[in-house]
Image (cartoon, rainbow, N blue to C red):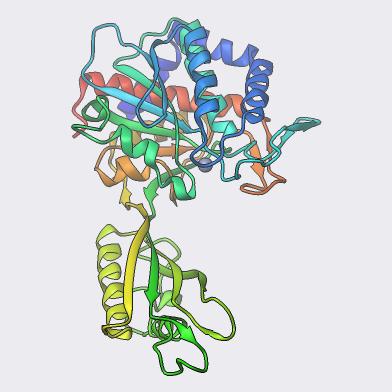
Length: 415
Ligand SMILES: [Zn+2]
């Protein structure tokens, strides 16, 4: 790490405005807990985040942030502006959605220091941090180097397929006016104050459907059977030279590619020849190029395993697409984070993950997903919990990283 980054962080941490922000964070921990409980009381199932977004819009308004609004995708947005108008913005985001379907009882309960409830950590911890950082900057009257864009975004989990983030980074018609301006992105995700996702695991998800004429099991015997055809095709996926085979030799994170057949369905009854059968396939890779090659390989195998005929149809629908990408080791954003961690005596632990940061990383825009502090467990279960012990130091870490990144975006070229 360069001495220059270290010095810059030490100077930033010593400014009176930052002291005011840190002090606010220190005194307002009960307020943060209150916000987190309020967030959890508003259900946010996939594709049902509107009520929680509206709550954020109210908070953004109450804090007096600039240009609070809900965008076309349903993301709640607001700005903390720089002194002079800036072309560039730094995006700080946290996802609104949970994995829990509508109707799940979401009311949190408290025990000792913990908050228990579905989504308590993922991502009520990130959402609380988002609001806390905006509030601390407002109370401290901090003026960042370039404008900070705060986003409580939709669609991170599963079927959401990163649609909130995709919208923010989509240029041109139907896209976001912020897209060409985002110089770096920091996604607040779950708990922890050491791990940081700097490499985006790519995935492509498919629904493969085989159709046939169907018929009576006795009268129409001999008619092509979609379940049998699909079964044959799936067995054919296990060929030794396929990109997803040979996993034992691959390291857990380097150039690893996996294929999972996760769900299968079809047919009508025991005495009917099925009219259709389908399967859901999840393909993942740490490398964007390998992911493309693996998909071609998969499509080719399926094509050959299920020969074209007049009565048999085969359809492949893409039901999920998360692009791969990585933050280069010499990226200014990573230098900043390392310097901040050294300043705060934290360890930097870069990881691989599938998060909202996939979108900017796949576009070559510097991005990380970072823990919002505290501890959490039971993620994606009804027993999920969050313990805010240690949250304050993680919030300092994020604040210093964001502000130094804004400072550098004002004076330095990121591209
Ligand atoms: Zn999450």
